[in-house]
Length: 300
Image (cartoon, rainbow, N blue to C red; front, side):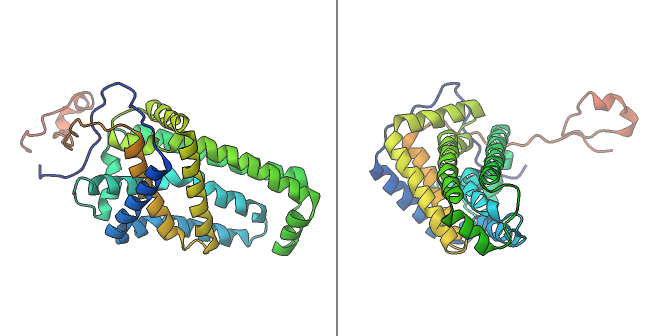
């Protein structure tokens, strides 16, 4: 087969990765490296980062139907829960750049060839569930304060939320609950997706490693969460357009944060050698359903 430069995770050694202590200075360095990756690969990362603005614009458009106005803020806040999923391709590009490999945008999809793909999909599904639960909780909080009636307009909705006791209760309780969801997401995903890309470990090991990273560095990780939240706020304040820059920078920086907090694994990465399927003949049916034939067997 022709040579390939697909970069697979290192084979698992069966142990839990070692966690290192980091400081705010490490966050600054991770952000600087993330920005450097963005400048080195601007076309690719903007292409991937536009996922967020497009989704945001669609959500904003749907909000003009008035029936989803109360959920516009929860949807926007929920982007933080889905961020690690959207940034997988960015992690891969940063991983390739640090080893001087080709960083064309197509390699953002190399994750599809990873032996860790089932774990990545499982963890992604967990974050999607968390996002769905958050939206359901946000809807329940709105109904508990304002009932099932839909706001007649944007102005009536804003007036009800900002000038009434029910609105104050919704703001306080809603943001407190949202903070808990964001904290849970940070703990289980801050380094789990990069770890799955880098090593052939299961989702349980990846999540445990992420939780241990946060527990070992509570102040620094809390600061990182605030940086991510502030970046997303700036992105939304620019009508989602700023997310095309902020999301890629944060995504690349997350990879470098992973490199700092998880001790490196110096074992070589295996080569990508897809299994070729052999020829099967109609005359062999149904036996060919239960056996394989050599891939190099001549056809005909």
